[in-house]
Length: 105
Image (cartoon, rainbow, N blue to C red; front, side, top):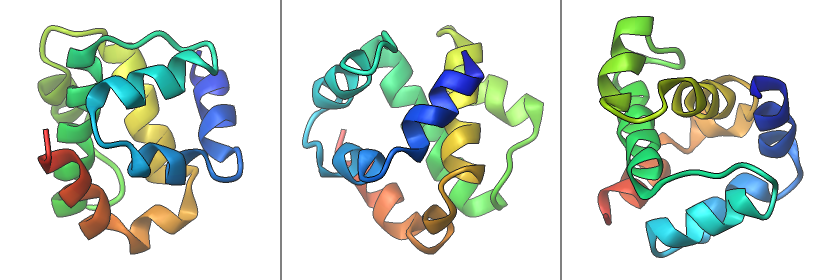
């Protein structure tokens, strides 16, 4: 699963499309089109994880990842947060934009 997530996140323009979404349901649909089924709670957990990563650095501890995932599928959420935090190099220069994006919900 993590390999598939990293492959999706590495696709040219995917993360940009994700950041252009206005609602969590749009992010959910974007991942669904790539074969990754996410709940709305998972999408929101990804946002919390990315926001936390923006304040703690590029990588979160396992405890931090589990904390943001809460009661949702932590493996999927963690893989997406990790993939965005490490595979998409440009993200480190765009934390404010990502943080603002997920605060809309």
